[in-house]
Length: 258
Image (cartoon, rainbow, N blue to C red):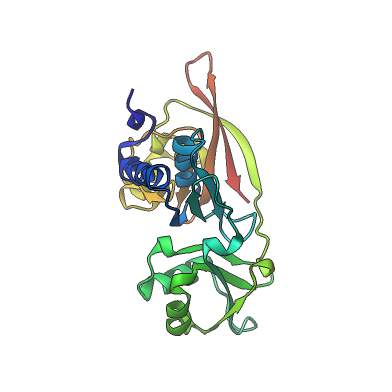
């Protein structure tokens, strides 16, 4: 039985990477620190390595609430400390009375100076405008030297202890819907109460993501646990497929971020 049958085709390169890390730890007794992984990637790691007694897995992203985390994989006899994850937390100082920063502004500024998405973790903006970002410590100096403006705001990045991490809201509003299939266009239309004719252009223009990856195929099939986002409509997650109705439609329990 092939391990690949449990994963989508586009996930295979990451599966191969995880298996390579596993070999480094079990055969060469090395430790491995990854870049930031999204929740789907973390699930893949756990499903592959979870039953291997010769590998110890730890994840950290700056706080116990972090969504994007770095993985530290070691032989079981090695102890792991917070310092092993090499995380730096920046507070973003900007004129909050005159400017409003959004998540996309901070994300765009980091990408514009050449920082790969895998090298920084969660971006936080509190209700009162306090903004923070977690980055891999190996690029912290570079980020600090190169980020001086975000959007229309002049900013300064200040390193602060991880203990001052903003506690994010993690509230999902749960609902149950029935869908004729698990196609992306069908599910999005039901989740966001849109017509399929309106949903199709969003997907084909690359405005929809599944598990943080752009998907431009309307017939892409969703699975339990998938995260879905549509630009301008927020994020949802398929919590469970709870069986079929009498009319052979899928009963789907999902959550939307508040």
